[in-house]
Image (cartoon, rainbow, N blue to C red; front, side, top):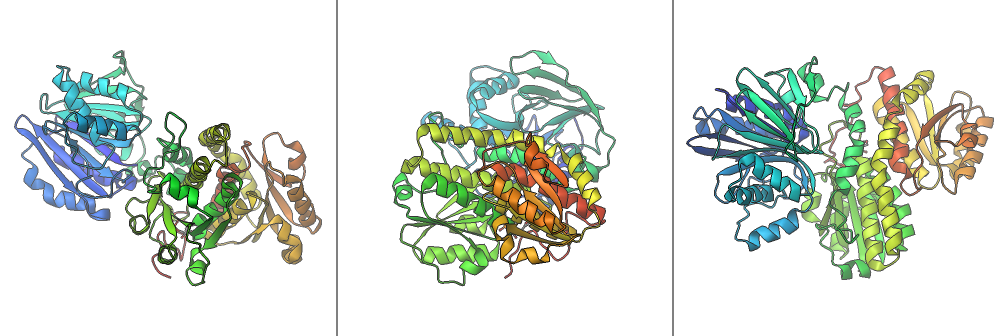
Length: 613
Ligand code: F6R
C-alpha cells in the first residue's frame, strides 16, 4: 500500500505534492519522492529515510523547485525491492523523459523485465513498477500520445495499479489510471489533481471523482477527461467530501482498527496476488528455497509471538494435513531459551508482521545457528527478520496503525497456507486437483471475509447486551482453538477485560471450576468434524450458568440453538475457517472496548513493535 499524488496547473505544485504526501504517510513511509516537470525538463528528488522520508524530502526539494506547474509524488510501502532511494518512486524510462508513480503490484513484472532487458532497456531499480515506465517509453516511440501509450501498456499488465504518469513530450499533462488500487481525481480553478486517497487533496478541493477500474484520466490544468480502457469517454460520479482531514485519513471510519478490519479482504487479495502462475504452480519467489530444499524438509517449526503465534497455530493444522510432516509451533520467547531439537533439514518459519519483534528475531537466529533453513513471513519489507532469514514470504496487508493486529493476522494465515500448499506441491503430498481446490478456496476467502465484516451491527448488538460482563472464556477445537486464542487476546488488549482462550476439550481438566453465572463463554462452533464435540463443551458451561455466545456458520440452526447469543458467519473449509471466524471476534472486542470508552488504536501498556524482551 503506497500513496500517490499529482497536480498540474499550479504555481504551488511542490507544496501541494508535499502536503499531500504528508497526508498519505499512513499508507507507508519507506521512501518518498517527487518529480516536477515543465518545458525545461524533469527534476526528480527521492529520499529513503523511514518514518522521516516525507519530512526529509520537504527539506531538500526547494533546490529542485523552479516554479514548475506540474508534478507527481509518492510515499512508499515497499513490496518489491527493499526500501532504498534506488527503489523509491517516481521511476523513469531509459531516456528520462517519462516519469511515473504507482500504488499496487504488477504481477507479471518479472517476465516483462526479462523482455525489456533483452530488448536493450536498462532497469535502475528492483521494483515491479519500473517496467511500466519502459513499456510506455516503447509505446511512445511508435508515435502514440502519452494517453494512448498508457492505454496500450495497461492491456499487457496484470495486477493492481493506481498510476500517475508524466512525459516531457507534453509536460502539462498527467495521465492517471486505475485497476483495483484506489484513485481519486479533481479539478478546481485552473488546477487538476490526483491522489490515492481523499485526505491528500482535502485542503485543495472537496469536489472529487472516484476513478473506476480500467479507467484512464487525462489531467490538464483545470480540466479532466476520463475514458475507459477501450477509449469510451465516461463521467465518474461526483463526490463531495464533508469530513475533516483526520476523519478522512481514516477513510471515514472512526478509528484505524475499524478501517483495518475493513481492509482485510484487500489484504487477502494482495497477499494472494501474483503467487500462482498460469500452470497452477505456486510462486513464492523470495523464499530462496529450491524444490530440492523443499523436498528435503523433515520437520517444520514455526516461531512467533502474540497474534502471529496464533496465525502459526492455524497453519499447523494446514501444514500437517497438506505436507504430512511433523510441525511444531512455538512462542518465540520460549523457543529461544530452550534447547530445541532441529534436524539438519528442519525448516524454521518466523512469523511477524513487523519483522522486528526481538524474541522472534532471536529465535530465528538460534535456528540459523543450528543449521536449519530459516524463512520469515513478514509484512514489512527489509525488516531485520527479512534481512537475516534465508528467505522471505511477504504478506501484502499494507501498514497497520492500530496496535491490535487485525488485517496482518489474516494475511499471515493466507501467506502460511500458500507456503503449505507450495511445499505440498513440490513434495507431491497433494495432487494437482487438490492444490487447485485449496487455492480456489483461499481465493474465495476475501469475499467471505467481506460478508462477515458487513455483519458488524449484529455483533455490536450482542456486545451491547454483554457490556457489563467482566469474565470471558473463548473456546474452540481444531482450527477454532487458535481462533479462540486470538479472540481472547483481542478482547484483553483493547478492552482490558479478563479473557482466556482454551481448547474446548481442556475445560474439564481445570477451567470448568471457574465457570459460574456472570461468566461469558464465546465458543467457535463453525463447521468441521469437531463441531458436535464443541457443542457438548458448550452444554457443560451452560449447565454451570455461563452465558454463551456462539460463532456458527450460516444455516446451522442446530448449533445456533445452543447459544444465548449467536454470531453468524458464512461457511468456509475448516482449514481456512479462522480467516473469517476471527472477524466477529475482532468486532466483539472492538464494541466492548468502545462501550468502555477506550482508545482501541492505542491500548495502554502496549506497543505496535516490541523490540525489547
Ligand atoms: C496482538 C498483537 C501482538 C503481536 C505480537 C507480535 O494484537 O498485535 O500480539 O502479534 O507483538 O508482533 P509481530 O507480528 O510484529 O512480531
